[in-house]
Image (cartoon, rainbow, N blue to C red; front, side, top):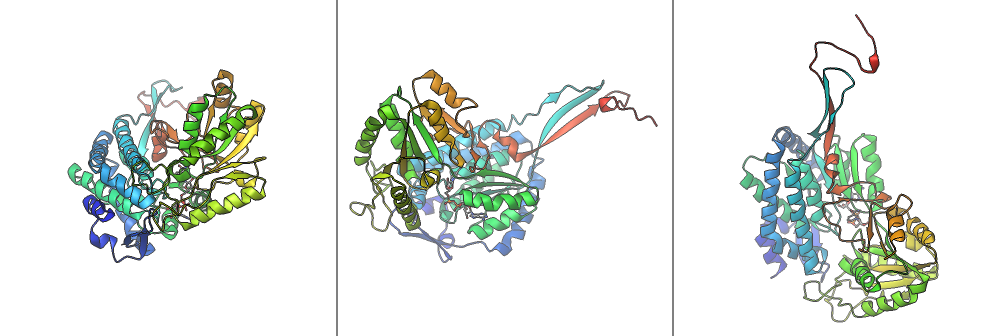
Length: 499
Ligand code: NAD
């Protein structure tokens, strides 16, 4: 099936994907997928007006009824899974099973949010005053601005939108300018769910096609109390002060530099599988991709030899072809960034395996690279920097405390893991003196999180949490209520104020 047929099936009209100024090309082969119309920044006032009007209606719809809309969205996503997954592959360059996996994640978060719509609980709190009751109520907060990155072009939107909408908030989505077509497809899928729902207010979801300028306008708006922004740390540094200056709230999901510690007792066969999937899957373009391997010196040589063997046999090529495990990088700039990082690593004393441009047996005009393994003498500057490409830096250690220290000595703090059969090492890694990341795993790689847990990271990763657990609280405002059912008016803290 061609990309055009897939887009037609998803409901994107020819008028929507032709004649615009934003050219969308496929990372697979550089082919033109569409010329999409960008929204001018001058259109923002109308967007905000629609979102505010939608909020006035939606906030009073009972939460379980709001959940019904997300249940229908889940149904529509199930029906569209094959087509949307294929479009993710065309537009972001993911292998087929990862494109489909991304849509499955959207379905999973919808299921989660439907259940959540009946569980937006507050606490009841013992009052110090007789005849009084205290409680917490969670109310909808207002329009949520969602800014998303190219590498999870649809799942990140759904993590935010499914929760925000059951929480009673309209969503204004500014997707990556590299992936506007999958965003248009999501808006269509949502519109179909909303039509079946019947009385969802107009403007509950609005998708704004355009670049950083449009994102900046969204971020600056006082009418958007919550900004959930996913992308590079550079973007987060630009967004956070603007939202802070107007005292808005931010959920930031930024860059990672994820590591695995491999102890001497580790099951190396399992470790090799986990390393290869998390370091080369999605061609190293996941925020949770494995970038640093911190391995005990007694097993270092053996592990690196096994990895090189596995890397040498990796099927690299067209991600739509069955059997391919490593697809293209998103664009030429990403390829150049990988090459530059490898040059820097060499200058900092690294020994490089792989990392070359592949020209044979791959589609022309796609940026295909062999994943690289780089043995480093120490954790130098390049290792501490996130390069969004399949580069795995290898560092040795002798003592577990030293491994944890190396592990935490980077500015980012998203995902982490340890491979060990030693209970003391595993528990130390998960303890307060262990990994400083938002996600820490034992005998599982750092990527491929389940939606049930809260997702996000510390330090330069931004501190936000999305998806499962109680991440929903970030999309609501908390109200403390005290009800006096007595005939007296006692004051708190025993204060006397008789008039
Ligand atoms: P990017 O920062 O270039 O762009 C992300 C989004 O931000 C785009 O929609 C872009 O238009 C917008 N944007 C850029 N500057 C902006 C500004 N000043 N104001 C408002 N919006 C602005 O990131 P990318 O290259 O698309 O994605 C890769 C990066 O995203 C990596 O660093 C990766 O680690 C990170 N990422 C993080 C997570 C996470 O959950 N932590 C998930 C996916 C990707």
